[in-house]
Image 1 (cartoon, helix red, strand yellow):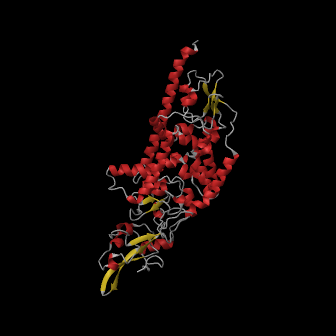
Image 2 (cartoon, rainbow, N blue to C red; image 1 turned 30 degrees about the horizontal axis):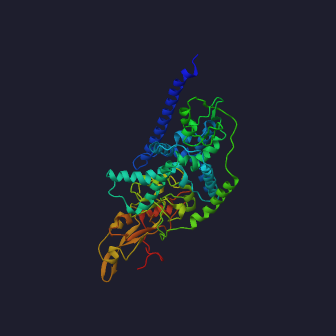
Image 3 (cartoon, rainbow, N blue to C red; image 1 turned 90 degrees about the vertical axis):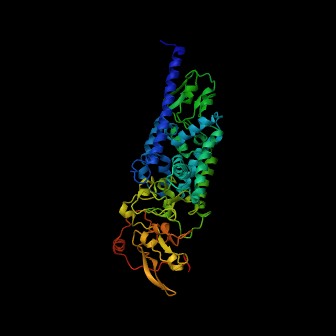
Length: 511
């Protein structure tokens, strides 16, 4: 029978192989996340590209609470919760792509883990804050969910930048510079927190980590010490999440992400992973929890009322978007719809719909119109904020109405022949009629408001420099939670057209 001294090298090699296997799993899943993100584009099938979000229990729970509906697409996330109750917080240590990105950044920074701090309760308090705000009718999950943060960073920062330098786009548009820089700053702050401690975000702030950490308190399998530990403290120094208290020979299951660093650091191999049925208590003060609860209840109404940027009816949502309050709660700001938009017309909002509308998609027709033969934004949305409508049905989902500004129109103001908007409209909603002004008879554009769906193609093609002479406003937008957009009347107007109506509603444009 081999002695402990003879068996030690074999155990060390085994633990090294297990640790290497963990890194391979992490890097494979991070690469898979990036590859699935890369498939979110026009011309490719979006099937299974949202699989990571479907296994995200934080998005499932908070969105379901905020929208008062069951997010069916997120039911698979219950498998992650069940797995956590058995294996512990494995998702954070092996699956989470943002966690892997943080590990890679920490490997460069090479910071040692400090003693466990009391403010690691922050992730549980953030979870309470999100749940309270959702119960009050506002979802902030898109600001804190790790998958949404990484996906948004890829969509708003890395994809546009790499596309620009690869020559796929001609320029980086300054119109979205602020939103892009804000998304980049968020990611850099999360990675830069590694200067304070490894996995700082995961151990102190991540609400998904808090949710899974809470479940880990009741997990069947846990790391623990054998009785012959000599309390050298090496395992505690190696732990990136501060889960180990070597003096008291305890491993906090809520903090442990199963990274196996302790096994490699322990010279005596006294740490084991085995069944332990006794649940652990949660170290969160009642006063702190009440503060987080109250903050969530107060933040919910403030987010929509304190700050707004006035667009005078120019906030255009993608076709198929559910009504605005539910849309803001269902949208997790992942940026997938913007990445998928073939014309790049979907751009991130800042404060056009209040603070909680930050990074939500809005159509900017001057950048790119809504392509008639594309319904990809609804297909890639992981939460149903944009309904997955059949292609024909999507063309009847009205997002606004085009309005001619006669003071800028070449035909109206300068008596120049211009039929660009009429020729560009794919819905037969613009008609050029002969009108005589100051003795000059010329074809001048009129908008059929009943037939217009607000796609913005007329605005994007308008040859006038600066703001277009025809612009889409959100008036008469048709946004439904359920039901169909196509009606017999809409189909009739689409097939034969109708007499154009006055295209300058009162209160919008003055001659």
